Image 1 (spheres, helix red, strand yellow):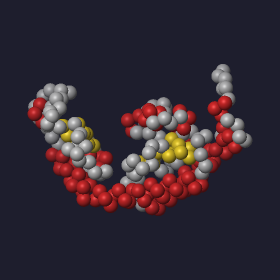
Image 2 (tube, one colour):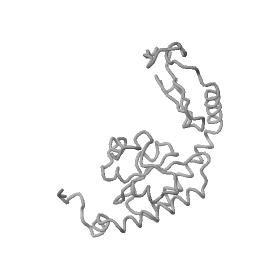
Image 3 (cartoon, helix red, strand yellow):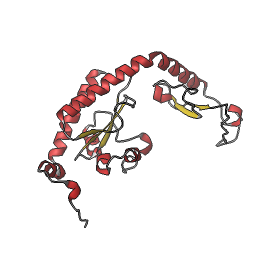
Image 4 (cartoon, helix red, strand yellow):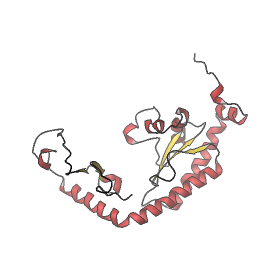
Amino acid sequence: IPIDVNKQNIDLMSISGHKIYGPKGVGALYVRRRPRVRLEPLQSGGGQERGLRSGTVPTPLAVGIGAACHIASQEMEYDHAWMELLSSCLINKIMSELPDVIRNGDPDHCYPGCVNLSFAYVEGESLLMALKDVALSSGSACTSASLEPSYVLRAIGTDEDLAHSSIRFGCGRFTTIEEVDYTAERTIKHVKRLREMSPLWEMAQEGIDLKSIKWSQH
C-alpha cells in the first residue's frame, strides 16, 4: 500500500521489518519535524537517535530493513495485484462451497494480504486445530494467548459469536495458487465436518432463531 507521509499528513508512523519481508527485530519510526512532534524517550543511556533511543544500532538489521523497503517500493504494484488475485481465489472458493461465511472488514478498502473470515456455528479454535498442517491464526500474535474474541472485530460491529468463529488467512509475495487451493479445500472439508457435529448448526438448519433462545447456565 503506497504511503506518502506529507500528503497524508502523518505525524508518527512505525514500520516493522518483518512485515515487509525484512529481518525480524528491527523497525523504523517516522516523526514529523514541522510542526514538530515532541517525544519522551522510554529509556536513557547512550544517546543514540538524539537521545530518543538508547543502544547500539544493529547494522545488519538496519541494512536489511533498508533493502526490504527498496524492494517493496519496486515490487509494490506487482505484489498488490498478486495478493488481490490470491485472496479473491481463496474467498470465492470458500464462499461458493460454504453458506454462512462472513468476510470481516471492508471488501474494497483493505489490505488484500490479510483475509479474515467468520464461519458461523464453528468455533475458531476447533477449526485451527483441524487445519494443523496450514499456518493460520485466529487473531494477531499480540493477542494469541487470549481466548477473548478480537477487540478489532468487536469494534467494527461483529457479533461476539462470529468473532469467536473468525480465522485470519495470510497471502504474501511467495504464496502460490496451489497453496491457496489446498487451504480452501481443507477449510471447506473441516468446516462441513465441524458443522455436522454442532447442535447449533442443526438448529439453524431447522429454522430456529438462535438469538431468540434464552440459554440457562448451571
